[in-house]
Image 1 (cartoon, rainbow, N blue to C red):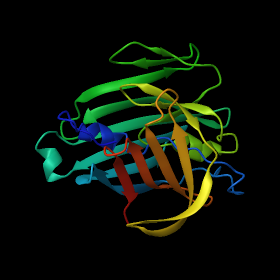
Image 2: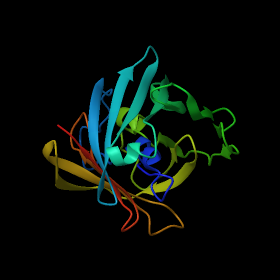
Image 3: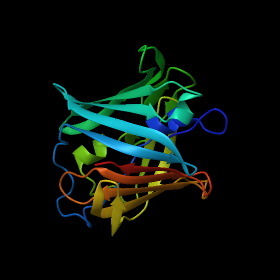
Length: 239
């Protein structure tokens, strides 16, 4: 999500804005297993109580999967420190399941690549353009920080109580998904029936990671809270 080098690595926080969410079919009989629709979603982003700008997420189908593009539109304060950046993630269908393949981050205006990652499924590794590769635990799910498309496409019946890697171009964190709950949530786009999903980071109980997902066969993230108390990044769906 948003942040900036001076205690605010804003662009990174924007691009990580829509991080991984995990839901349970015990709460939604539809299962969230319909193929995701092509669409563009916009979110306002608040960092430590300040307007940090907006995040635009574009979902497009390809011949064998999807591409998700997340574009940051920085506020005037953020523009004083950074340029707008874009994160692009590639998914492909493998044996009827949508699987994360790669991602990259680049400067929106110039197209200059900042960093990238590749998933070597055969070797069981996540390869980063900067930093050492990560050997994955067997059987652990993969999602991407900027948008949880694989979960939306593949269904969520086995998500609760399982672990997953939240992958960005810089790192991969291993999270645990707790049992989801139902509640209503109000965001700029309106009031919705939602499913609240909380993720925990083993070894770091102070980290907050909550996502409110619109209930139904075509879910989208409505509100996302990440960070720690006093240092929260909050994202909410715009009309």
